[in-house]
Image 1 (cartoon, rainbow, N blue to C red):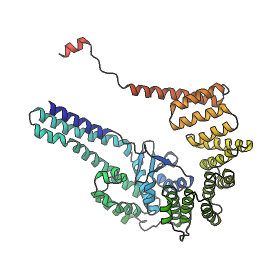
Image 2 (cartoon, one colour; image 1 turned 180 degrees about the vertical axis):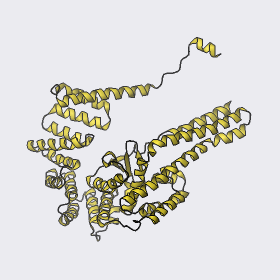
Image 3 (spheres, helix red, strand yellow; image 1 turned 90 degrees about the vertical axis):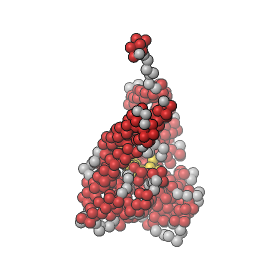
Image 4 (tube, one colour; image 1 turned 45 degrees about the horizontal axis):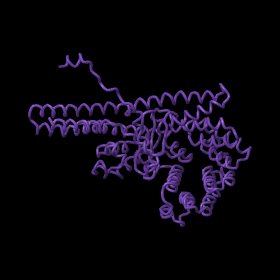
Amino acid sequence: MLKLKIYLRLLAVTLLCLLLPVSQAAAQSLLRDTEIEETLREFTDPILNAAGLSSGSVDLYLVNDPSLNAFVTRGQNIFLHSGLILEAENPNQLKGVIAHEAGHIAGGHIVRSDYGTRSAYGAMLIAAGVGLAAILAGEGSAGALVLGGSSQFGTVEYLAYSRVNESSADQYAAQYLERTGQSTAGLIAFFEKFRAQEVLSQARRYPYFRGHPLSADRIDALREKVEESDYSDIADDADSIHAHEMMKAKLRGFLEGPQLVFSRFPASDQTKPARYARAVAHFKSADLRNAVREIDSLIEDEPNNPYFHELKAQILHESGQGADAIPSARKALALKPGAPLLQIALAQSLIDTRNKEDLAEAIDLTKAALRTETGNSYGWYLLSRAYGEADQEALAKYATAERYYALGDMEAARGFAERAQEDLVRNSPDWRRAGDIIVVADTQLAKKRSRRRGPKPLTFSHSSVSQNR
């Protein structure tokens, strides 16, 4: 029986490993930048429309992670790792991956993946059952071999199902790119670039190719599509290439070490992407003079580019020159009116002045941004600061409650909402919203306490025990 217990324990661990969901974005942080988000939207929205999806209902997220990965989740969300964008050599390669992910959404693969998991689970249970039956029948060695390989049955079944989904998403991607007058060659080039991943162990593969099994058959099927397409030789337009290069340069400037950036983009390189990356790298090196010099040269070339003014405002503000940042932040917002992150950028510099008129403007700007992005926790933090500086303590407590609510800290959210309600005008919109936060927080905290207690232990009456005997 000891051997049987060991096998059963092995089976339980194997089942647990197969069935536990992988939360791929749980440990990473999300990157926010209006320019990069706009570029990704320009690349993505035509593809979503070609897929029959509403671009307004599909959310796009940039994950701060150097690994090469992209994935979709329920609720029509596409996540792209920063490492994926940096590895894409041109817009067409990036658009190909985005089109592939859109294919997963349009094909309903996220919902259907539950079936694939259950199918794999069933195959493994059947194999495990056969192995256990052999052990109980006295064929311990044979049973152990079958049982030991039961997880492989499930894995093979699941990967087979996953490969079907991947091939299907490839074909969808080819259709969407065709409908938008673009080539599928970029997706093939991207796959070919990492074809060596096929021979690597699962642990050594890039995350993208662990979740998206690559095969020669998939690449060959895509190549047939390219050869049949009227758009196989269509190249990226100059504007898309420039936007892609500026996006990558900005990411490298912020995410890579300054010395690596200076090595990639030496002073002799006077292209706009190179100066953009160096401006950020000088800023990160606390070299304010050279950072401003580089960004000023870009503003001289493109005085109506809001993102150059935005970066200059950020450099000045984060270097302790908040008042000097206001003109640049104001110019950026004037060139891109209504952009929530630019509204917040101007508001944070205005708050630092502690001037009564500036505080009033900062409050209006932040509230406008939060009407568009209700879950922006930093926006709520700034609003609470502005209210505090303006001696509006009740509203500062309310904004803090919203901040913690956006962060998912229900205990803190409830505490501040309750304190805000004590001082807010009864039945005012903010008073009622604070009440909503309290109700939701109470519900969530009760569920959390219930999960901590765990399921109730099974109990048997004396009569049921004697009957079982």
